[in-house]
Image (spheres, rainbow, N blue to C red):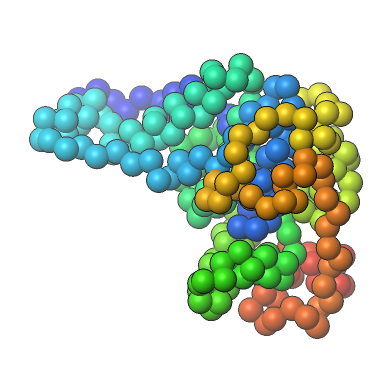
Length: 250
């Protein structure tokens, strides 16, 4: 049996926006996608692409090639990102799927040289937006989901190197924030990024990103004022402290 080869990726250093749901990742991806060298498509949901070995023969073949099922899936994910670059002719690909946050450890194993943008938003605003967007779901389930995302985001930030962006800063000063992101990605800033509505970013439909009128406007809309600490439920206090949203840490 051949020894396990070193990882080879068509896209060795992709960029992942790691964020909770309802944190403004669609806005950020549209701003980045407007850049002439950055491809930031709609949510790709790579984790939902799975490989099935449907016969003993394919199992034998993959074993002889020293390829486990997980690594075959990684090859598929890598090719999907490579396709985005091949089709657009751009140099950097950014995936903003919120679900990536729940498998950040696997992303890090798949792409040891990946780069990360940690997108933060006030936890209470995340919860309120999530509840408004999921009226049919049990509010307790929505709150549990948001809490899970926030805990994974905190864990990822403590483990991985990356750039941290606050949604509140993005909506207040998109020019400065986009400049900082471009510097992190070693790309020159382009002023066209601020008017993302001038470019085609694909359809804004439910399930693969934000689809509200705000995102369809094509310009960065003002954000909301931060809530007072007294308005934050106990279940979100830990996340507010971890991300510096308590009034004493602002």
